[in-house]
Length: 205
Image (cartoon, rainbow, N blue to C red):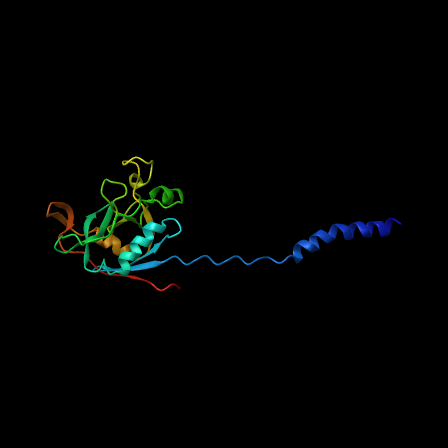
């Protein structure tokens, strides 16, 4: 009696394990590929990978300017070594290129999602008004904690990061080393134009 009872208990204990291993596992969906944009500059190509899940409005705004050819012929008009390089809005004659409406500043949600103004990230440039960004962007040369979101005040709202450089950070560093001057009422303007020749959305791999 003992041996059959022991065998029955072992069989009962084994059944749940068999049921667990036999259950089919649902396949996890592959993560959507993040869009990438190539910036062809007079110093070489830069590729940025964007974060539409964290900054949907900002990424859509940026891609819209890319697809409309807005960035072709603009310059990096503000270069500050040890800080950032800024471009995408002015022509070589320092006239501003026409833009669309300002985009909502998504800095609170992007900061919460882990996007910060660290070296190599791309963010929207703006005036002192939090929701004034249009087409101009900047690339951080160092970790710029002071530009991150802190609170909902005008001073603490922060600058929206929406992607990062994945190729060509050395190009960004070369741009950062150009000599600058004061011109047309603006400081930190490269003495010789750093051109943004073209911006294109790369095919999804």
